Image 1 (cartoon, rainbow, N blue to C red):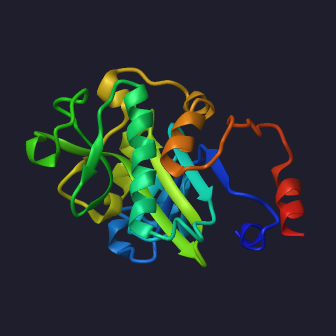
Image 2 (spheres, rainbow, N blue to C red):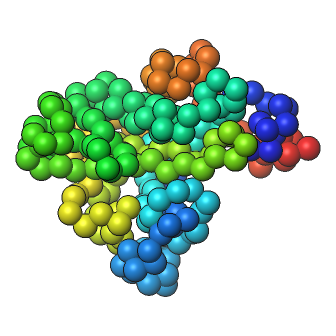
Length: 224
């Protein structure tokens, strides 16, 4: 973030697939973590407090997580517009894989009707509303941090470790659960450049695969 704020790098979007981790946002209710830290650790999951907005969420294999590091100044200084653009990224990616999703008034993230995953007429017409993608952001001097998480082929049982985003009335779903099949997260990420370009207004020609590179060395170089 510091490198972007100081102009040493341009806008960057990091796309990745996490190991098991439960994260707490700034407004998180600790009681929404249903397992003890030791139990989570035994299941291979860390418990981490973060600076993003929102409550408790889970990240893990099968989930595409995006961290845009963008400077919204001077002409994109609109938090609601930015959050809506993150939702649009996930809506378009889901559509690419035969799932229609949308946003819901009063609820953050991207939602689907599990009873009709190829249709989206809005929440009032949904018979089984479920969350497909989460959004949690933080901005500092109009530099963005954190971002979005789209459930591609995520093990949905892991969401039983928590009350996702503090919402007890709605379930969580994935592209795999809705369609019976899902691509690899890497495949979704590599093909996401046109969607990111349209939704976020970032001039991305292609997504670069950094697997196998020394990311610690790259991070150290950016911090210099």
